[in-house]
Image 1 (cartoon, helix red, strand yellow):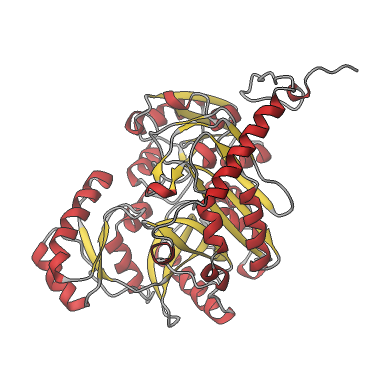
Image 2: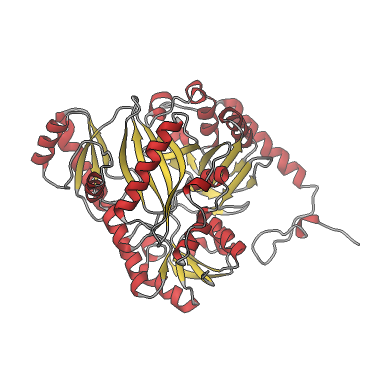
Length: 496
């Protein structure tokens, strides 16, 4: 079996750290890249070597394709892992890798291009008899066409950008009177985000669940799914809590959706790890939404319930190796929940909260995993996505893991910046979440005017004061050459 000796990770933060750790287990040398503001970032300190890309502006660093390829060549990296975000779904970047003789750890550029075009992806799925949401199969800028199509489909409709994702360029239109304004706004946002303002319309499905299937496909025609994840708890189309299995899933529905997901992957010719995303309506009917052509933020909950390292599988597939298991070999055990921890102020419309982490204490215990990209003393920059870490909990049942996650969140201390931790605790504690009545409008319906209780704020302040008082009696830890204290540094004065 072949394998890379060195790879470059074209990303930052917790996902770069997570990829580095699997590479270390596999004996693969890693090259980190970073911007000026990220010189002391965790991924830089974790990697075997690190190279400066440029200024903090993404276009000068993490989106600078020519510079990244040049660094890969100069360091002898045989492959590039894009993580998620930045260039992960950029077909031009994948093609540049291909023509430069560097392996792109993801699908081929042609697949990225086809599936990145949402209307083309819909046509591919319709041809393969994958159920799609009623709507347009061609993109346009024509307001008259949008009005006619909306009347044909029936209001409410969803205006969507043909390129990109992450909720950008999307608007719900309830009435004809707001169609033109919504389209103009969506076009402008899509043009700025993706360089393409083309739109199409789909029927808006009321209060659906967002259910995705994790897929693996190798170069030899083998395709499997690793069961579903429910990602219905979202704000502004961004997922914040994910779980597996889905509370709505039955064995029959899982089997049916899994087969359709495999058909979708085969129809597109997909290779590597990706997800087939569906909307599941209240009657149990499901519709194809899109294929996410990369590793997903929420991939750890699948890893924790199947025991399969998805980053390792990405590397094996990219190196040309076959999957070593079949669909029948894959089993799921227990229940898992992931909470995304952001440096945001949920009381101020989730406005980013950059700053210095003055106190950092991770939760621990059975069934707890924390994929983090920060440490105490780290300066959180304002230039990038404010995700700090992903907290994952597993247990035998949904209720057991829900309670475990709440305990872990309450023991997760990040002081110096505002975070979403108190908000996540309240969502997990809500009656509707406990019942499993989740849908994509859950946050808007139940937590639109959320505010943190005064008691929680007081407890955080007390924790900080206690830590400060306790630290005065301790010997300060020397920071090692790797950027944070080693276990030996933290012992203080000692003798043998």
